[in-house]
Every structure is written in structure tokens, then in C-alpha cells.
Image (tube, rainbow, N blue to C red; front, side, top):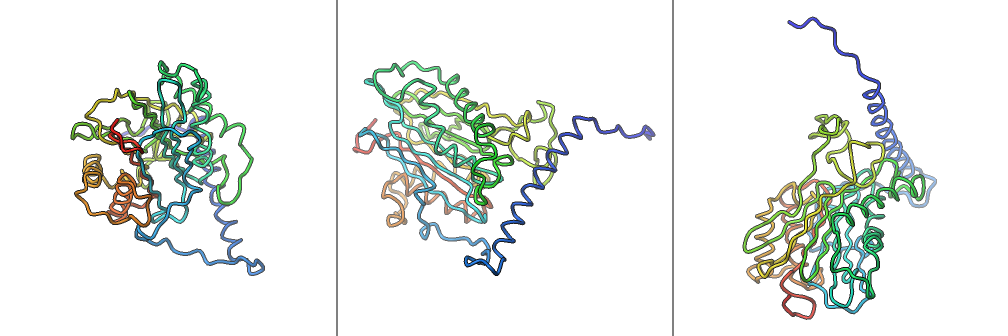
Length: 359
């Protein structure tokens, strides 16, 4: 029997615990203020907070505020579709960006697709939705004209862009625009998975537990890995509704979450895939999908939708493309399987563009 007295907590451990407790207190205070505002009889906008309901996806239209689409250039871009739903959560914290032709020159055009899964509020996910593709275009050096973008160091550019985005969130925006909807940016973060698709390459950068999966030659090929790296950095993972960093966050990489630095980092994992004729489609989705579905099942559902093996069900509520239909089917299947999170799914066809031409 070991009679040695327990080791007293270190100063670093006390500091980290204090920061985690302070973050939880701030979130609780925000919830308390919201509850007080909703229950105030003197306000003209008094509402009862509804219980979360599971709504069939064919009753849901994706708000344009939740998806940024940049179509300033009349380019022939890839067919794509996305669907985002709140699911069983009370608030929507996911965001999606679609920016066709966000980067182009005389010889090459790149489309940008991104899915952001916020936590602690939607503030950081919204900022990423508005800014990350623009930051990347600035980092590469143009977004148009004669600038040579055919020979880009993608890993360097992606890492620099994610770092700039993280600095914007943790520095320039700290303490600003912290309304009750977005929550305090001091305790807010977001995962990010983005894909840059050109005629020769698919470049994926992932920071967190969202995921990108390529369907290549009949096989589901993950182009990203879910990140769990805290203990290697000297942090602690506590068991509370699953493993969490200091009992707060379930992923080890994100944009924002400055109070959990250095154990949560914003450096993305970057994968560059050389396109071939065997590439059929790409799925980007938040963990609301991947928590209840394997890569193989998701790819099989999309394959059947795009090949016409599944009857169309959502032609009145999505944009009419096969990719949007496939995204809607995946969302409904995830809800039926009991997903407890917001769900955002983005499907990109790699065989055809908007003009119906093969790539």
C-alpha cells in the first residue's frame, strides 16, 4: 500500500483550472442573462424558449445568412450543394462558405469550400465564414489577374492563413461585437475544414473534428484526420461527456479558444491530392454527421443520389442539383440516427461543372 501523500497541484495546473472555471462561469452568465431577458415581463418581445424539435429536412430551407456564396466572376465552377440544420441543438453554431473561382489566373481557377463548426457560440464560425477564404487569397497573393498561382506552397499558405484568422479572432476582435447571439469571443471557437479545388489538385486543410472525404475509384478516402493532440503538448484530457481538454473542449485544434492555448492550436493539417479521372465527389461535413455515420456509408449515399439510384425527395427545398439532394439525404439520415449536434454537409461533384461539362 502506498502511504505517500498525494502530490500537490502545481502552479501551472492551478492556473489552467482557474482559466477553465472562468470560461465556464462566463458561459453560464451569458445563458443566465438570456434567460432573464426572455422572462422579463416588461419587454415587448417576451418569448418562451421552445424545446428543440427534430424537423424533417424537407421542411427546412438553408438561410442565406448561414452560407456565403461568392459568384463575382462568371466562371465555370463545379456542381455543389450544401444543407445546414440546427438539429437537436437550441442554437445554430455551424457556418458554410462556398466561393467559386475565389482564386484565378489565365491558366488555373480554384473554387473554395468551407465548413465551420462553432462552439461556445457562433461568433468565430461566422467570422471564419466571412474572412478565411479572403485571407487565403491575400496570403497567396492575388485572387485574380496575371499572378502565378499554379505553383503555390499550399501547406505554408494554409498554415499562415489559419494563423492570421486565429490572430484576428483572438486579437483584433476580442471584446468587440459580442452580442447575446454570438456569445463572448473570449470563450468561443470554431473548427474548420476547407477544400480548394482546381482542375489538377484538391487541397484540404483541417483544424478540428470536422472532416473531408473523397470518393475515388469506388473507395472512400479520408483527406483529413480528427485531431487529438493535447496530452502530447502537456495538457490534460478530462472525462466529461467524452474526453475533453480541461473538461471544456472535445477537440485539440480550433480557431479561437484563446483561453485554452497552448493546448488548443490553430495549425491545420494540409493534404494535397492530385486529381485523376477516378475522383467522383468530395464531402465536407461537421461532426454532427460523422459522429453517427462512417465515411463508407456517407459516400455510398452520395453515390446513389448522384447516379439516380435514389428517388429525388427534396427538389422543392434544395437548389435542384444532385449534390444538394445528396447533402439533404445525409442530413436527414444523420438526424434519424440520433445526431445531437448541428449538422452541415457540403457535397462537391468532381466529374461535372455547372455547364454540364466533364472535368
